[in-house]
Length: 463
Ligand code: TYD
Ligand code: MG
Image (cartoon, rainbow, N blue to C red; front, side, top):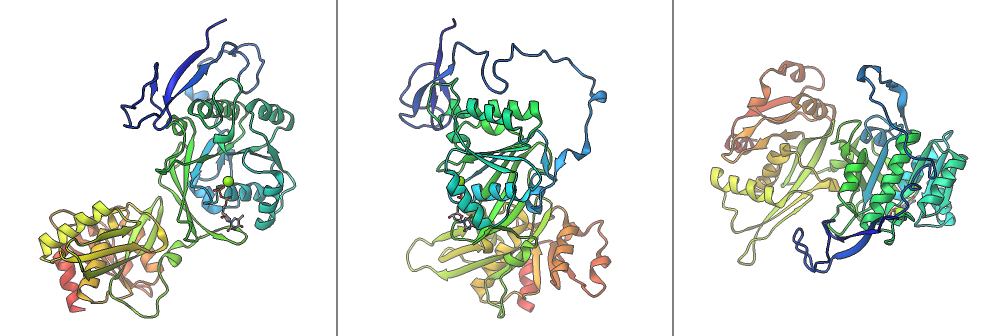
């Protein structure tokens, strides 16, 4: 019999060490190392199809002879989910959904399970009782006779039930509650998570059944457990949003079957999550009056152009140190943009408090929002209104130049579709595009092209 092997793991970052140490050199935390068994003597019986005699040796196959069926994706009724998954649920794929407690992970997956009527679905939960799930299903209101609930946390028992039941989709709520009897440490520990995920991935790949895993997140917002978990699965989705906002965003952070920057938007209602098919409408505040400090930026998330309202408030600071605060926008990027404004356009913002808010609570990293952030700040500072029918999309460089952004045509078309009459873009963006296509017809939109930030400011003073 081989000896039981143990190793020490940092509970914070997952670094391994053969001996116990008090201080983790990797993440600078203290007292985070715990001993975990990584391998037990009897290794033949672990995981999916336990007890089979040894492994079947795989043979190399010519790539040309590999069969690939196009219709292997299961389309759900949820268009937002289909989009973030790259077209639908791929057979044999493993999808990890992470998010803060109470954001709606269980609701989302139960809703998917209930909407896929005709498919045999096994929802395995280690967190809630059957009654609790039933109550949630009643709230959601959909019915699927083929949706089955299993309250179980041991992987061996789960695989036994799966073998008897042969489901078409498996949902695990959550990976942190599972435990495999081949590992000694408790549920939720790094080696348990790794082992349970490995067993489930093996099952998914061999049986072709899609598996959804719900994952908890740590205080910092990353999925709890080893980073390697994200490498092991095919798709990682992050379910984000503010508990106080109604809107929830499902974002792809990794996808082996499609684009990794897709985004789905939902609203949490009294009866489950509702898809938002036209997000720009909720991201733009319906306003009757125009105020200063508001501008509209055109961003692209994944494949979708979104129009987002940026609000800024600039007030003289009462104390020595001016405050800078940004909600849903990178504070460092904001400081950089303000510095450009001071240096290149001569605004004295050093004695002003500046607050920035992206309406709707959508975090975006598209640099095309730069120009609208600066315009909102200037609009508030000078107390001038930006016409409600104008929007803008351009990146601002350190020397105050407006830089071109990608996919300009789809941005302009989206603004046009929503009834905007003017869009501010970088002049470099207009090379090679057919400007007259946008500037004629019923929905005509004026393309105002600029090379430098100062020119944009000049345009406002006139209007
Ligand atoms: P839940 O799916 O349990 O969150 P998670 O699994 O991510 O921890 O959902 C939690 C919140 O959603 C909870 O505060 C109640 C709310 N909710 C609704 O507002 N409407 C609904 O129809 C449902 C089912 C939940
Ligand atoms: Mg839950």
